[in-house]
Length: 228
Image 1 (tube, rainbow, N blue to C red):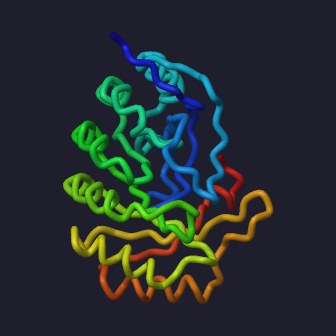
Image 2 (image 1 turned 180 degrees about the vertical axis):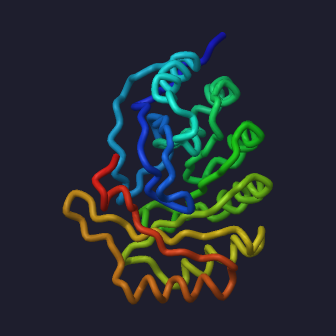
Image 3 (image 1 turned 135 degrees about the vertical axis):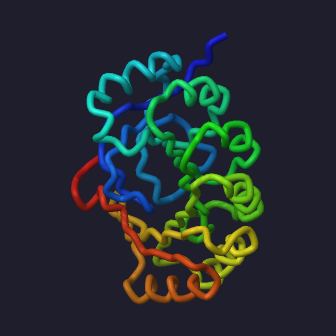
């Protein structure tokens, strides 16, 4: 029986976050998330079902010149909530598969990790998200993703604590210190002032570099350019 996936939109744009900033991608944005972060800017429709073949048809309409695109971004929301649908969809996609995930569902990742090429994994810091700590799940998730092309991204805010940065980096170090970490300053949304001060960013990077080999500070560049 064919699965139905809840998809909010399928479109092309420039990747605005993480290690692959500037790359042209086709985005498949999934509806639904298991978290509710204070800084989240995702607006979703409630009911928009697609079959895997429906998605492939929409992607192929965009994919007129394969050389233009780096990969297809599986994003959300949290795509791993729809893992059965991903099992059917991912083998049908022609481009490299780039999974954007909040990094809290390691058991779901293990079901499809062999079907993706790149894992862009968030680590959720409680002071930034307003949610509970998921460090235990994050560590298991990173262990599962380690043998793929993986990097970690963490949103930091004015309320992020140096202790949290060190705890996160100790987690990554236990798994593999060469995994790149991107510190992403929160983008102000709906009038909220989440963004950290420049001196905080410099301090966070210095703390992280004590444990990890590659630590970058990269904002949401698509917000700067007006891209989706």
